[in-house]
Length: 178
Image 1: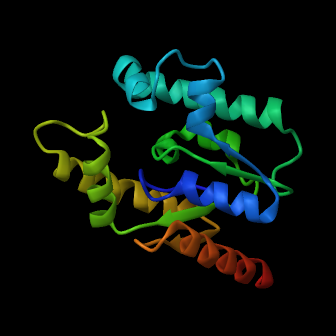
Image 2: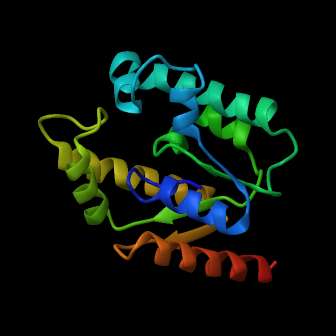
C-alpha cells in the first residue's frame, strides 16, 4: 500500500489488516524499530542521512522484509505500508516487484498539504518554498504511483473506518474483476 505522505497508509493498512485477519507491517516502522536506524523518527533519519542514505535504509528494510521475515507470504495474509517516498527508490521497488496487490491511496494534494502543515514540515520540503516543493513532489510521485498501482483508491476527510470500508469494497470489486 503506497501513497503520498499523510494519505492514511498506516491507519488504513492497519484497519484493513485487522478486518481481514492479516498481519500488518509499516516499512518506516521497521526501519526505525528493527535496528536499521538509530534515529527517533524518519524525519531525523532523513535529516542525518540525506535522501540517498535513507533510500539505502529503505532498500535494506524491504530486502530484509521480503527475504527474511515473510518469504512466500505476500498475497496471502500481509498488508505492507510503504513510506511516502518509497516509489522514487528504484532499487527498493525492484525488490517489491509484482508481489501482492499494489494499492495507491490517492488523496487531494490540498488535504495532504494541510495534514503535513499540522504535523510539522518534513525534511524533504524547503524552508523557503514548502508549498511549491510539495506541489512538485505530489505531481512527480502521483505519476509514479499511478504506474505502480493495481488499484487506485481515493481517500478523503471521512473517518478512517469509513475510508477503510470503502477500500475493502474496492478490493472486493478488484478481485471480482479478475
